[in-house]
Length: 118
Length: 114
Image 1: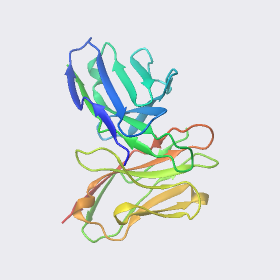
Image 2: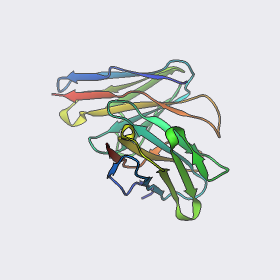
Image 3: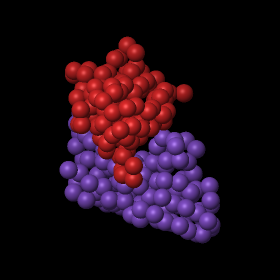
Image 4: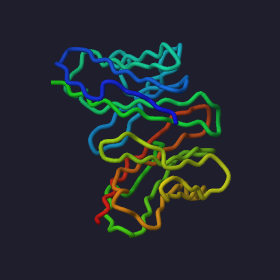
């Protein structure tokens, strides 16, 4: 089945530095990828929709200059948390939508990245 | 605001008990509906999905869900739970229209006692 690889799975960084998270679709092409953030004991909150070859679409309240998204190929999207602060500490999850039309398109999730900013 | 609601935040059951987790959404028009499960330390996995047709959907591991359009609901059920069903369960909706965004509910943590 479809597999999405997310890397790294866990990262600690110092406040003020930037961190890049990669999301790769391993055996399918993903024209659209999604980035979510999950706070402890809360649901997944959609941050942005990443479209291959174009700018990402950010959800209301998400700072696009802080969370830079690049979707340079059909199998790779990256999320860069710039000038990270402790409040950015969270669990970040990517999801890729297979390049199939409705009604049977599927969403496959990465294993997530635990970011801790100290 | 439009949303996906899961009213049960934490459910504790004994093995062999029946399970029903509620999910309601507030989006109008055509919607696509999903249930995902997240086992401890693992990533989200799809349990089942509904796009159209028979409103009673059967998924993996003995789970099923019923879409009731008039109630804006998509409740998840399992006749007899096992200890291995201990996990967090998320209902998710793709609202109608051009969007393909998956909107998640707040999740329900299920603990099954042996």
